[in-house]
Length: 118
Image 1 (cartoon, rainbow, N blue to C red):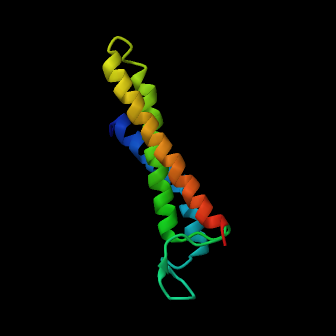
Image 2 (cartoon, one colour; image 1 turned 180 degrees about the horizontal axis):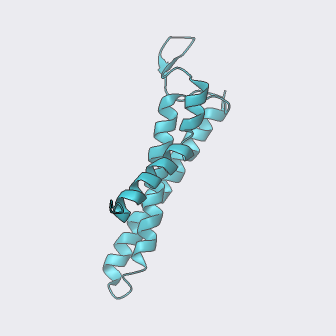
């Protein structure tokens, strides 16, 4: 009888699947947009398509990576609570987690501002 896969493998597969979905990559697969769009004025490639009803392939990948960075930051903040008796280490974990979560928020805010401005 086959053995059950390790929990870390199952967690990794589920985590990657959730990142794929949260990044909007299913929408990208269904709509099949071009991988890189060109600017009509100069022909320069654009990586973030204007408009909230359009998503390029690279946008989904970037969104998935940013979600992963934010999740790691939140996980580090939670993990810091386990080191109550090592306040220096807990403080470093909290600061790193807040920086990662803040950077993810700022990147998403910037991407959303690029998408909504015409």
